[in-house]
Image 1 (cartoon, rainbow, N blue to C red):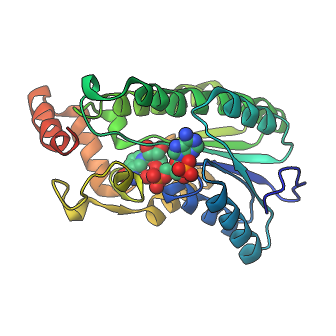
Image 2 (image 1 turned 45 degrees about the horizontal axis):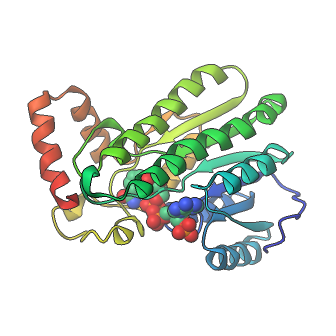
Length: 268
Ligand SMILES: NC(=O)c1ccc[n+]([C@@H]2O[C@H](COP(=O)([O-])OP(=O)(O)OC[C@H]3O[C@@H](n4cnc5c(N)ncnc54)[C@H](OP(=O)(O)O)[C@@H]3O)[C@@H](O)[C@H]2O)c1
């Protein structure tokens, strides 16, 4: 259903980047859990098809809200819409992309777009929804950061930096919201099968071992199980990545650099 004036009868979840990958799976799993949905991304056709499919399959109301969230006007329009949504229970800040290549060689506009999409959009949307959630004493904001938020790597400098912003933003906000009934999560997945790497034209079979890949289904299930099950603020799906994050936090700098160079090579 693409009617944006739709009245909702169930708790509502808004998912950004819902046309593909993790966002699409978030939409699916939230529909299974009985949420009405506001689905956001640029591709209006894919969103409308998903909204129709989930409405039919789960008897919920799903609406498409096509928007480029790296642009100021659509970003603010969505924030305005969500700030007025009485039943909004869950916001998933998920839309994102990566780039390949050193900063000095990339178009500056593309890098600025990443900062708008990864930093400004989640901040504005979260700021828009939290006051009503506090009033109602319920609500959940999930921001899809990354294992990359714990590190830095070449060919990936703004990606790591913006993902670190997302994680730290959620961690700080969790402290501010303690006792309000509103909760937040920084979801930090590692390599996950979605369209993310295809869009960057990275060959997934080269340089990244097969055993390390996760499925979008398991990542999203872990996120939602933790969200609705009183889990921690920072969620790192899968024991392999929990180990990697622990190592990244405590390993000597020289070893971290060596690993970063090895995995960064595919991106430059
Ligand atoms: N896949 C991984 O290995 C991995 C690991 C860690 C973290 N992540 C994070 O997970 C999140 C989702 O990525 P994914 O892996 O699911 O990638 P994906 O399959 O490429 O999906 C990205 C989604 O973001 C949307 N999007 C991109 N630019 C947008 C814009 N300007 N405005 C609105 N929507 C936009 C895309 O839709 P449209 O093209 O229709 O706009 C799409 O729905 C990202 O934040 C990413 O950084 C991914």
